[in-house]
Length: 223
Image (tube, rainbow, N blue to C red; front, side, top):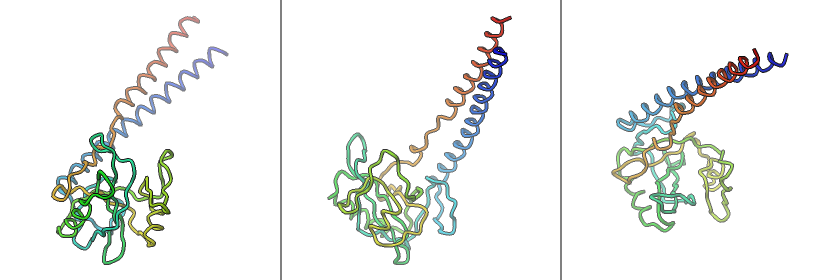
């Protein structure tokens, strides 16, 4: 009975880890397709359409001149760039004179950076501006502090907090991050995509194989 229980246990572990390895291979294929699509969108970004509600996150698009940036920045704390600590400047983005979303202008050394206004002016003057999409939600990382609207201290881009702060409804399911090198150099969205699924799958397959080997060794010892 004991030998049967051990056999069932190792077979279960082997099957489970093999399944997880196959799942990671599926995720690897999905992630590679996503990266290829994002790279393609960066090379040849399409005009953003509010009618499309299923954009992949980090997809690059172009915003036409109907989108206007307002010089009402909030600053996300503790953002690093080239080992320097600074802020991300976030500004409201209007469409047809109504707030539609927010735009992340990227990293700035301090909150009084005069470049913020210059970048906003460049944005509003350019015909089509390249940006990429991030999902705009009210969720936050467990270890990120709460935003303090009273003191105007921000740690995350939070949909509900933004609506309270700007006292208006934000209808877009996305916020935008500036990617246009003619306005300001910033990070390629690909850096946010970690693709370690091949390593994970190899680990799970090795665990599956190890379980079978252990089972064979134990059974031979008990023969």
